[in-house]
Length: 319
Length: 321
Image 1: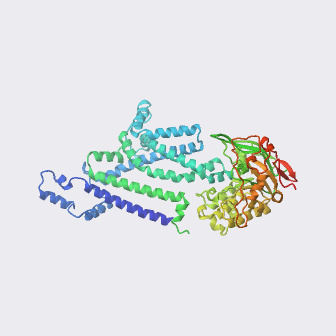
Image 2 (image 1 turned 120 degrees about the vertical axis):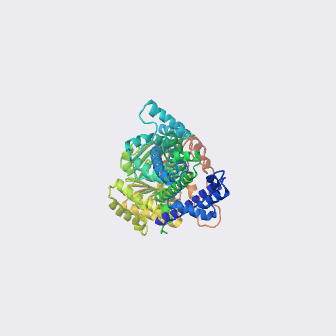
Image 3 (image 1 turned 45 degrees about the vertical axis):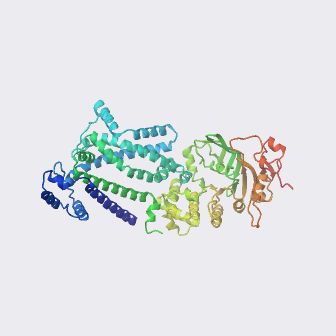
């Protein structure tokens, strides 16, 4: 098991390295010379050359990459071109907001999606199944921005039970924080829940018709144990896979959701950075996203191993 | 009174094509310590008959009538929570496919202790000790190590032994073994049958053995019921059945047994099994039968006594001489 995790960590590091190379080259491949841009249109070639030397842009690409990765690893991601603040500080301020939103959305999605998926599979062909499948289809089809606006209209304008927008840090006032996060989390989690519901339902349908479920019934176990332990355990691999794959959708969903609910998160930071051509920030945002993806996939792989003894034992010392 | 009494059992399934009758008017009994073989070809209703006892048929689509009594207690109308105390405790099942019948995500030890903790109320540790004994009982070497292993680490024969260990964990009155040796190598088959024989001798377990293999029937069973198209066509002790088969279908099955003789084609029964959707009033075997007469096409032969303890459903039974 330890060997398995180490191997997976190793490949994760390789992927992150390749990702950083791509980001580095991608920025260099953009049209235009940063030194010329920085020096301004009227600058003499000498000035441009001086800037080039100051920022190490005259060095060969591999040397530049080593500089870049060295700076990144020591936490220096450059300064925002908008307000000259260190990028690392901006990210440290924005990332937790999005992490909280994503975690809450994921919680919503798991509770609703997996729960509804199990119910739909067990009650296949009954009313509960049609209701769950219907909501699943609706949840998949409805775009976040529309759902978000609708939720604001309903909860904040018509019923006035929840605030429409804004953000209060959790450390400052947990109750206020949750009050403002619940709508965005629901909106962001809905589409996710729909996907999870459909995948859980089909995985559970497969598991419920498996021979080992019949064996579990023949032991006289309660339906709760047959479904909740024997069938669900074998469906969880699918659920975890979908969770990992959908992380990308969650991030892009967060961009839109944060925009609607005016939450100063990572998503909003990304949009703002792109709109103002704030390259240092974009570069950092992309890098953090890549790392996030790799880490989540690593966690998914490790979760697989916990769920599936065939994976867990094949990498171990066992014969 | 017999341990298990099945009377006029009829089982059908709702399908898109209508009601399919899998079993019609089966009556049989099983005594303590008896090994009863249910034999016949695929689709003859032998598994459905046996699975009606622990009620392991899909509840939504199954249409069942008749009576199944265990120790005089009617099982067909027993409420589901009570039935769960019967399953795995009084009646347990060994399934055909050892490869897929064990849960791949749980250790062997867990899958055995689970049933012990459910029915015997044993502690985790006591159940573990008992499971270890059971693994040794069914002939699994290095049982302590196997307890921690997962099904994919075991061979087919080992898995089937684990299945048997689960099935006999709570010393059931009736053990249903659904083609328990079909998926196994011939050399391993004999070992598994020995386990069954041993259990019967030691615990007095009554066994319903579902098989299409007459060799297995001759090897281990005391009595046999031959089924065709959902009905019992012949019923006798195994010695009597093999000595004096009366029904032409039974005869056909025996002729189709491969022998060690060199050359020659294996005998087969011509024709097809009739559709379970229809039930005309005629002998279901008539258009495949070498002894068919006019009366076979007009009415259905009832199951009648041919000799002591020997029943057959045929107007023109053979072997009376």
